[in-house]
Length: 285
Image (cartoon, rainbow, N blue to C red; front, top):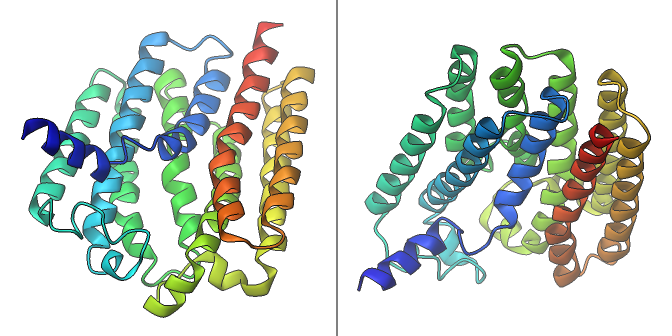
C-alpha cells in the first residue's frame, strides 16, 4: 500500500520524468557558475539543486490540481493521479505545500535578498498553471518562473542582482517559449477543443518560424550575457553547439508531426547542457 501510494505521488510530481527538473536546473546552474566566477560555493549549489527539484515537483502537483477538470478530456493526461481519482485534490495541495515549505527551509541559511526573491519565485511557480486560461502565451510566464533561479543565484552568491542576471533571465524566457511551443504543438488539437491558450495556437501557421526566432533571441541574449561577464572562446563555442542543437530541432518540427515535436522538446536538455558546459569550461581555462 505504501509503495503504491509513493508511486502515485511520484507520478503526480513527475519525479519519474526528470526533463522538467533539468530544464529548470540548467539556467539555475548557468547563474550559479557565472555569479561564482566558475567557483560557486558548493553548499549553495547543493541547496539550489535540491530546491529546484522540490519546487518543480510542487509546481507539477499544483498544475495537476489546477487542470484536474481539463486533463480528463485529453487522452495523454486523463489517467493522471488526480483526474483518475487515485489521489484527491486535497492530497495534491498538501503535498505541494509540503514540498514548497521544505524548499523554503533549505534557503533559510542564505542572505535576506535571496529570501526576499523567494517570494515572487513561489508566486510564479504557483500561479503559472492558471495563466493558460487568460494569457495568450503562457510559455513566456513559464520562462520567468523557470528562470527565476538565475537572479536568486546571483543574490545568494553576490548579495546583489547585476544586469547580466536579468539578461540571462530574458534569454531563458525566449528559450522557454521555444521548447514549450514544441511541447504545445503536440497538444494543439486538444487545446483548441478545450479553449486553452498556448503559444502554438497564438503563432498558428507561423509556429515553426516563431520557435526558431525564439532560439535565435535566446542565443543572442546569452552571447550578450557572455560579453557582460567577460567570458571567452569556450563559452561561445558552447553557444555554437547550442545553435546546432536548435537547427536539429528545426529538422524535427518543420513537418509539425506530434512525435517529432515532443522529441524536440525533450532534446532541449542538451541545449541547456551545451550552454552550461561552455560556461564550466571557460572558467577552467
